Length: 256
Image (tube, rainbow, N blue to C red):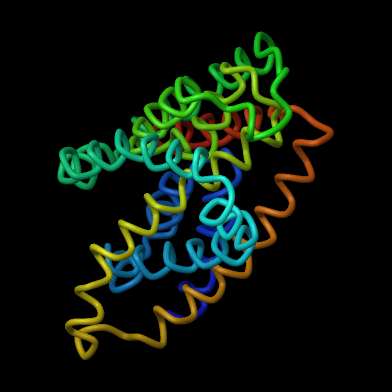
């Protein structure tokens, strides 16, 4: 049964990490709704499944990263600079995020509030910038600063950075691609810092359970990236916003 739970949570992580509906919120809510506890309800397990989504990013965008390092160091520098706000916020607010902001009611307000912001961005963003080569340093810093807000459960890292990109007049697909490239060093840093505990004390953990979560997160994450990039070529973010509103209503109903 624990293996099935690990696979389910890995799939949830893989899908919701990249769709603009908040992976942190869904992992918290799944455990909350079903009362799942134990090793799958731990920071180390979360690190394992985030490792799966990190691998999905690296595999899907490996050509982009090769090009960045070999040919487009300007954009690589912008990504590095844009990573700083979220990295600093993660280090400074780690304990607050882990112990104070995981309340379902906070998730409700985040789902609704930032869903409304996504609709506003869709309406007023001009979407003139079709290529990542048109991104300026100001764009990168604006989007990177927005990424720091994603520490709040219910915001969604991809949701807030794509929204920020729309406000800076990027096309949806370009905003999503930059969002995914920008998230790679942040997720990678978190996996490295927390994953050292797993590597240092492997006997303390059920690595088979972690491996199942990792693999399911990788597979589902890879296809979630592919789906979203294709979806945003043709459709706005509205359907994800409506999902956020429905989810928030369900949570409120359960709470009340």
